[in-house]
Every structure is written in C-alpha cells, then in structure tokens.
Image 1 (cartoon, protein in one colour):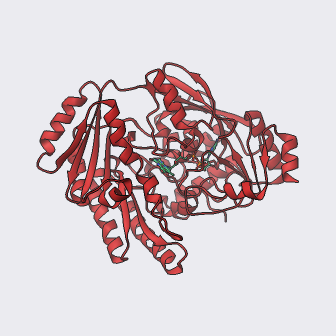
Image 2: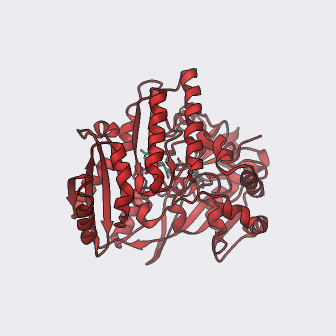
Image 3: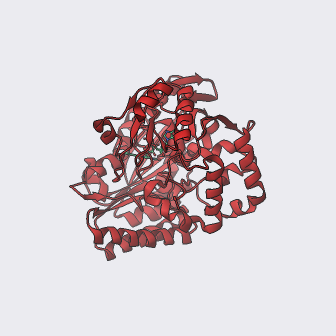
Length: 482
Ligand SMILES: Cc1cc2nc3c(=O)[nH]c(=O)nc-3n(C[C@H](O)[C@H](O)[C@H](O)COP(=O)(O)OP(=O)(O)OC[C@H]3O[C@@H](n4cnc5c(N)ncnc54)[C@H](O)[C@@H]3O)c2cc1C
C-alpha cells in the first residue's frame, strides 16, 4: 500500500521488496535496521511531494547517499529511505569560484569535473569514489587535506532544502527563509552559551554546529552540516572552490613506534603542511605494506612547497628516517593510495561477529595534546587486553582507532561501553571532541550530552523541534527520542 501511494505522489521508483529492503538495511557500520520502503526521487519536486505525503501519514524519512556512513546514519527502522544517488547526482553549474551540485553527486565524479578546470573542492574523504555530496554535508566530512584547506562546513555557501512538512527552503548568508529566521530568534539571545559551549578544535561533527551558524555573521546554512538529515533534506548545494595548487610535494617519515610519530607531529606542523597523516604498523599489513613502526605522510603545497619540504627534512632528521619523498603527481597519487585504502583494508579484518568496531574511532584533541591522548588510549587497550588498529589525521589531532571485538558477546559489548566512557571523558577533559568527521549516527547519539552538557543539548532539541516538530526526519539521530 505504501509503495502504491508513493508511486502516485512521486515520479521516481519505489522499492518495497524484501531484497531491496535488505540491501538498504546496512551501511558501513555494524548496525542493521530494515526500512519499510525506499524511494528514489527524480527532482526536488518529488522530494517535496514525498515529504508532504510522509508528513500527513507521520512516516519517518531518512535521506541516503552511498551508505558509507560509519555509524548507522542512513539506516531507518521501518521508515522510508530516500535514495538521492539514483537520479539526483547532477552537476548544475560550474563557475570560476563556485560549483552548484545535486546532493546525490559522487564526490569523486565532481573531483574529475573540477580538475578539468584546474579547480578543487578540498574535503576528500577516503571514500570519495563512492560517497555523495549530500552525505558529506550531513556528516561534515573531512579527509586528508582538510588540515590545509578546511572541512565540508567551511565550503558550503548556500543550500536548497525541503523541510519535514514538504515546504521548500533556502539558506545562505544573504538569504534566510522563515524557518532560518526563527532559528536566528532562538539562538540570538543564547549566543554566549553557543560561543562557550564548543571545543576549540579544527574539526567537529558532534551534535549541531551552532557555533558555525553564530560565527562573525549569521550563517544559517551551516546548521545543516553534521545534521545527519535530521533538520531538512538538501536538494541542491553551492560550494566555493579553489584553484589546484601549482606544486605539491610529499614526504614519508618513518618512526620506530607510534608514540615517536605522534610526538613528532607538532614539530612537523611548524612547516605548514596541508596534510599530516599517521599510519601505524597495526594497519600496514592489511594495506599490503611490510614493516614495523609508524609512518607520517606529510604534504606541502604552493610555490614554496619544495623549500618547505627540504627544511622539514633537515629539521626532523634527528627524529625520523626519510622513507620516501616525491614531487610528481603520479608518485603522489600512488603513495597516497596506501593511506587512502587504510579503512577499506581494516574492514577486511572482520571475521564473523569479531570486527574492528567504530565508537572511539574519531576523537580530536589539539595536536599538542595528541601524545598524551594516544598514551591514554593505548593504556586502556592494554588493560582490556585488546587488539586494535590505529591511524589518522594527526595534523588535526584526529585519531582513527578501532579495537577488535566480538560484537555478539555481551561482556565485550559492556567492555566497549566502559572503554568509550573512559576515552570520551579524557578527550572532553582535554578540550577535544568525540567525533571530528564521522558524525554521531546511532553509535554516539547517547554521548552527545556528555560532550556538550545539558544546556547545549537542550538547545539542540529546541533546534530540532523548530525544524521537525514531529521527529520525522531521521529520528533517533542527533537528538535521542524520549
Ligand atoms: C572506507 C571508508 C572510508 C572513509 N573515509 C572517510 C574520511 O577519510 N573522512 C571522512 O570524513 N569520512 C570518511 N568516511 C565516512 C563516510 O564516507 C562519509 O561520512 C561520507 O560523506 C558519507 O557519504 P554517503 O553518501 O555515503 O552518505 P550516507 O552514509 O548515505 O548518509 C550519511 C548521512 O547523510 C544523510 N543524507 C544523505 N543525503 C542527504 C540529503 N540529500 N539531505 C540530507 N541528508 C542527507 C543521511 O541521512 C545520513 O544521515 C569513510 C567511510 C568508509 C566506508
């Protein structure tokens, strides 16, 4: 019945057979939730019609791009999944300083289009060959080069939206619809709470990014970044873009162990790299690389890239061995692919219900505190007798680490809860965030209050209810259902 009715209101296909519902019941997390049906809208009008129908029937709706979210963000328990990747993946406009895209466009496809014009949109998740722009906005995705250029939130200029009741919206610094104006009225008197309530880190995907909304100017569109489709659905996005750097150089430094590598990161940062990445030996083997110890991948960009790399090599000489360096495009792509494949390879460690589990996999602290933070995490793993993998965007203080546990075991699940509590408390005490780029999803929604405290999380609930009073958009994500 649901499929028949949806087919009457929208042009795109509707899937409700068991096979399709099974396919859409998983993403790149360990969760599994089965939706009632899947609709593939053809255009923004379809999205509006579907939302009007869903609103009238109180039917929950969850947007989906490629389903590469790591914490269950695109999964729906008996609701409707809207798959934007089928028909809404077009490039709308490519100008000198900005690009307009539909939400289902794959980032890697956009990268190729931009490269033809010598341009780029810097956020570059390792999943870029699959993940979509809509998913990147909703998770505030980052990647290797965000150290030098910024995260998805920093590049969004304006958004076309569809709200829970099916009405269309638009948000940018210069234009604000009624709902965004209402948000301004809500947040204005609470600007001090927002200003003091956020961690001082270079990337953050936890909760709603009200700090970015209430920056030096009111930037309403930024509330959608990291919102996991819980406030509105994005039907079109405008991003500012940049010229590709003329020169790039990459230096790979070898260290005897992970602590030496992590502790060297602040010294490397003095030379202003645009990327500073860690790959520990716990990941090497699964990436087809031999060896012990840890590596730092350091990229420099711009006219003085070579000079910066040479200086860095000289100064770091006593701390590390130079494993490799390159300044030609082909070598850079080849070397980076070892880092890019890290998570894909780690996923292959899964044997039945024993897997590298995502929960404490995305903490961020100031890079100067990363040494102490890493020591705390390794001590916790040792006490719990856990095998683990470890890598990350150490230039941003962002550590990706996963203990390997049996998710079917009650005692191991309890232990993971204990471990998360310990690691998150230590992260928050250091002024960090519990998630830099992967978002909260199902796994971390219960920890958002621990991160921000009651006053800010109450504000998140008020923002949610302003946009989606019936809790129909991706319920259970960002704001727990009470
Ligand atoms: C191997 C691997 C490597 C990864 N590497 C990185 C990395 O380096 N950096 C990084 O930041 N992340 C990384 N990720 C995480 C993930 O790829 C990103 O979060 C990605 O941006 C999600 O995009 P998606 O299209 O798959 O979105 P999905 O997983 O399908 O959805 C993510 C969220 O977006 C919402 N959404 C989708 N479309 C819309 C829309 N039109 N309007 C509103 N909401 C919408 C969904 O409801 C959901 O909440 C990696 C994941 C994998 C599997």
